[in-house]
Length: 223
Image 1 (cartoon, rainbow, N blue to C red):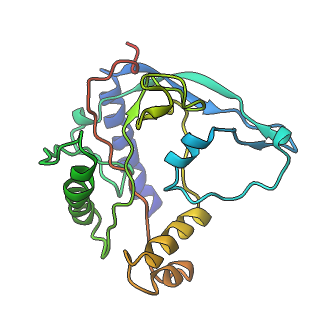
Image 2: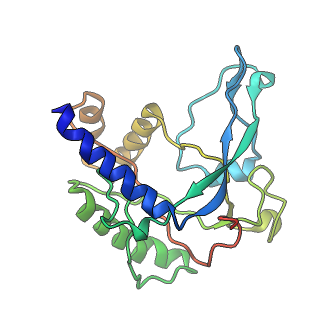
Protein backbone atom coordinates (compact mmCIF):
# COMPACT_ATOMS: atom_id res chain seq x y z
CA UNK A 1 0.00 0.00 0.00
CA UNK A 2 2.90 2.38 0.59
CA UNK A 3 3.61 3.18 -3.12
CA UNK A 4 -0.06 4.13 -3.57
CA UNK A 5 0.11 6.46 -0.58
CA UNK A 6 3.18 8.40 -1.71
CA UNK A 7 1.55 10.40 -4.54
CA UNK A 8 -1.22 11.47 -2.17
CA UNK A 9 1.39 12.55 0.36
CA UNK A 10 3.21 14.59 -2.29
CA UNK A 11 -0.09 16.18 -3.30
CA UNK A 12 -0.86 17.14 0.27
CA UNK A 13 2.59 18.69 0.72
CA UNK A 14 2.10 20.64 -2.49
CA UNK A 15 -1.24 21.96 -1.26
CA UNK A 16 0.29 23.04 2.00
CA UNK A 17 3.13 24.74 0.14
CA UNK A 18 0.60 26.57 -2.01
CA UNK A 19 -1.09 27.88 1.11
CA UNK A 20 2.28 28.92 2.44
CA UNK A 21 3.01 30.97 -0.68
CA UNK A 22 0.80 33.70 0.79
CA UNK A 23 1.96 33.04 4.34
CA UNK A 24 3.34 35.30 6.99
CA UNK A 25 6.52 34.90 8.99
CA UNK A 26 5.97 34.28 12.68
CA UNK A 27 8.22 33.83 15.68
CA UNK A 28 7.65 30.40 17.24
CA UNK A 29 9.32 29.70 20.58
CA UNK A 30 10.41 26.22 21.65
CA UNK A 31 11.95 25.01 24.91
CA UNK A 32 15.62 24.09 24.60
CA UNK A 33 16.49 20.46 25.25
CA UNK A 34 17.78 20.38 28.83
CA UNK A 35 21.32 19.16 29.58
CA UNK A 36 21.75 15.63 30.91
CA UNK A 37 20.55 15.33 34.50
CA UNK A 38 18.16 18.27 34.29
CA UNK A 39 14.44 18.50 33.46
CA UNK A 40 12.43 21.07 31.54
CA UNK A 41 10.23 23.13 33.87
CA UNK A 42 9.57 26.54 35.35
CA UNK A 43 8.42 28.13 38.58
CA UNK A 44 5.19 30.15 38.50
CA UNK A 45 3.45 32.06 41.27
CA UNK A 46 0.49 30.77 43.28
CA UNK A 47 -2.19 32.85 41.56
CA UNK A 48 -1.13 31.66 38.13
CA UNK A 49 -1.03 28.09 39.40
CA UNK A 50 -4.63 28.41 40.58
CA UNK A 51 -5.67 29.53 37.09
CA UNK A 52 -4.20 26.25 35.85
CA UNK A 53 -6.25 24.14 38.27
CA UNK A 54 -7.83 22.34 35.30
CA UNK A 55 -4.46 20.62 34.71
CA UNK A 56 -3.94 17.87 37.33
CA UNK A 57 -0.33 18.33 38.47
CA UNK A 58 2.21 15.57 38.07
CA UNK A 59 4.30 16.11 41.18
CA UNK A 60 7.95 17.01 40.55
CA UNK A 61 10.15 15.29 43.13
CA UNK A 62 13.50 16.57 41.91
CA UNK A 63 15.55 19.50 43.22
CA UNK A 64 14.38 22.90 41.99
CA UNK A 65 17.87 23.92 40.80
CA UNK A 66 17.70 20.99 38.37
CA UNK A 67 14.79 22.57 36.52
CA UNK A 68 15.85 23.92 33.15
CA UNK A 69 13.91 26.89 31.73
CA UNK A 70 15.53 28.03 28.51
CA UNK A 71 13.81 28.73 25.22
CA UNK A 72 14.76 29.59 21.67
CA UNK A 73 12.78 31.48 19.03
CA UNK A 74 12.61 30.35 15.42
CA UNK A 75 11.34 32.32 12.43
CA UNK A 76 8.79 30.10 10.69
CA UNK A 77 6.52 30.43 7.68
CA UNK A 78 2.87 30.14 8.74
CA UNK A 79 0.28 29.53 6.03
CA UNK A 80 -3.40 30.39 6.05
CA UNK A 81 -5.33 27.17 6.59
CA UNK A 82 -8.48 28.81 5.24
CA UNK A 83 -6.90 29.02 1.78
CA UNK A 84 -6.38 25.25 1.48
CA UNK A 85 -8.47 23.61 -1.27
CA UNK A 86 -9.52 20.95 1.26
CA UNK A 87 -10.46 22.14 4.73
CA UNK A 88 -8.18 20.83 7.53
CA UNK A 89 -9.66 18.17 9.79
CA UNK A 90 -9.07 16.83 13.29
CA UNK A 91 -8.42 13.37 11.87
CA UNK A 92 -5.77 14.49 9.37
CA UNK A 93 -4.10 17.77 10.44
CA UNK A 94 -5.19 17.64 14.09
CA UNK A 95 -7.21 20.86 13.94
CA UNK A 96 -10.26 22.35 12.26
CA UNK A 97 -11.37 25.90 11.49
CA UNK A 98 -14.97 26.69 12.37
CA UNK A 99 -17.20 29.63 11.59
CA UNK A 100 -19.26 29.45 14.75
CA UNK A 101 -21.26 32.51 15.86
CA UNK A 102 -22.13 32.25 19.53
CA UNK A 103 -25.17 33.39 21.47
CA UNK A 104 -23.10 33.56 24.68
CA UNK A 105 -21.97 36.79 26.30
CA UNK A 106 -18.22 36.20 26.38
CA UNK A 107 -17.74 38.96 28.96
CA UNK A 108 -19.98 37.12 31.41
CA UNK A 109 -18.58 34.09 33.26
CA UNK A 110 -22.00 32.56 33.95
CA UNK A 111 -23.01 32.88 30.30
CA UNK A 112 -19.79 31.23 29.20
CA UNK A 113 -20.37 28.22 31.45
CA UNK A 114 -24.09 27.90 30.78
CA UNK A 115 -24.31 28.79 27.07
CA UNK A 116 -20.85 28.59 25.51
CA UNK A 117 -19.88 25.28 27.11
CA UNK A 118 -23.06 23.68 25.73
CA UNK A 119 -22.37 25.11 22.26
CA UNK A 120 -18.81 23.80 22.23
CA UNK A 121 -19.77 20.40 23.63
CA UNK A 122 -22.30 20.00 20.83
CA UNK A 123 -19.81 21.13 18.17
CA UNK A 124 -17.02 18.85 19.41
CA UNK A 125 -19.39 15.89 19.61
CA UNK A 126 -20.44 16.49 16.01
CA UNK A 127 -16.81 16.80 14.87
CA UNK A 128 -15.52 13.70 16.68
CA UNK A 129 -18.48 11.36 17.06
CA UNK A 130 -17.64 11.09 20.76
CA UNK A 131 -20.17 9.46 23.10
CA UNK A 132 -19.47 11.94 25.91
CA UNK A 133 -18.10 15.51 25.72
CA UNK A 134 -17.50 17.59 28.85
CA UNK A 135 -16.48 21.24 28.91
CA UNK A 136 -14.41 21.69 32.05
CA UNK A 137 -12.39 24.91 31.85
CA UNK A 138 -11.98 28.22 30.09
CA UNK A 139 -9.51 31.08 30.32
CA UNK A 140 -9.40 34.47 28.64
CA UNK A 141 -5.80 35.24 27.65
CA UNK A 142 -4.20 38.67 27.36
CA UNK A 143 -0.85 38.98 25.59
CA UNK A 144 -0.02 42.07 27.67
CA UNK A 145 0.10 39.99 30.86
CA UNK A 146 3.08 38.00 32.19
CA UNK A 147 2.84 34.21 32.32
CA UNK A 148 5.26 33.89 35.24
CA UNK A 149 4.31 36.81 37.49
CA UNK A 150 0.59 37.59 37.94
CA UNK A 151 1.39 41.08 39.27
CA UNK A 152 2.59 42.22 35.86
CA UNK A 153 0.30 43.45 33.10
CA UNK A 154 -3.17 45.06 32.93
CA UNK A 155 -5.19 44.56 36.11
CA UNK A 156 -2.23 43.30 38.10
CA UNK A 157 -2.87 40.43 40.52
CA UNK A 158 -6.63 41.15 40.51
CA UNK A 159 -7.03 40.36 36.80
CA UNK A 160 -9.00 37.24 35.89
CA UNK A 161 -7.22 37.00 32.54
CA UNK A 162 -4.36 34.65 31.92
CA UNK A 163 -1.24 35.58 30.00
CA UNK A 164 -0.62 34.38 26.48
CA UNK A 165 1.95 31.60 26.30
CA UNK A 166 4.26 32.18 23.36
CA UNK A 167 6.09 28.87 23.74
CA UNK A 168 5.09 25.66 21.96
CA UNK A 169 3.94 23.32 24.69
CA UNK A 170 1.47 20.65 25.73
CA UNK A 171 -0.58 20.96 28.91
CA UNK A 172 -1.45 17.30 29.14
CA UNK A 173 0.34 13.98 29.25
CA UNK A 174 -1.15 10.49 29.22
CA UNK A 175 -0.85 10.43 33.02
CA UNK A 176 -2.49 13.71 33.92
CA UNK A 177 -5.15 13.32 31.22
CA UNK A 178 -6.31 10.16 32.98
CA UNK A 179 -6.21 12.02 36.31
CA UNK A 180 -8.53 14.63 34.79
CA UNK A 181 -10.94 11.99 33.50
CA UNK A 182 -11.01 10.49 36.99
CA UNK A 183 -11.80 13.89 38.52
CA UNK A 184 -14.67 14.44 36.07
CA UNK A 185 -16.02 10.97 36.78
CA UNK A 186 -15.81 11.55 40.55
CA UNK A 187 -17.74 14.82 40.09
CA UNK A 188 -20.51 12.97 38.26
CA UNK A 189 -19.79 14.61 34.92
CA UNK A 190 -18.77 11.32 33.28
CA UNK A 191 -20.43 7.91 33.77
CA UNK A 192 -19.06 5.53 36.37
CA UNK A 193 -16.37 3.23 35.04
CA UNK A 194 -15.17 5.53 32.25
CA UNK A 195 -11.73 6.10 33.83
CA UNK A 196 -11.06 2.39 34.27
CA UNK A 197 -12.10 1.62 30.69
CA UNK A 198 -9.79 4.39 29.40
CA UNK A 199 -6.88 3.07 31.48
CA UNK A 200 -7.38 -0.44 30.07
CA UNK A 201 -7.53 0.85 26.50
CA UNK A 202 -11.16 -0.17 26.04
CA UNK A 203 -12.28 3.38 25.35
CA UNK A 204 -10.61 6.16 23.36
CA UNK A 205 -10.36 9.65 24.85
CA UNK A 206 -9.00 13.04 23.87
CA UNK A 207 -8.68 16.60 25.13
CA UNK A 208 -9.58 19.22 22.52
CA UNK A 209 -8.92 22.96 22.81
CA UNK A 210 -11.51 25.30 21.27
CA UNK A 211 -9.92 28.70 20.69
CA UNK A 212 -11.83 31.83 19.73
CA UNK A 213 -10.16 35.10 18.80
CA UNK A 214 -11.74 38.05 20.62
CA UNK A 215 -9.68 40.71 18.82
CA UNK A 216 -7.51 41.01 15.70
CA UNK A 217 -4.05 39.47 15.93
CA UNK A 218 -1.71 42.22 17.10
CA UNK A 219 1.61 40.51 17.91
CA UNK A 220 2.04 37.48 15.67
CA UNK A 221 2.45 36.94 12.76
CA UNK A 222 4.95 39.77 12.46
CA UNK A 223 4.75 40.31 8.71
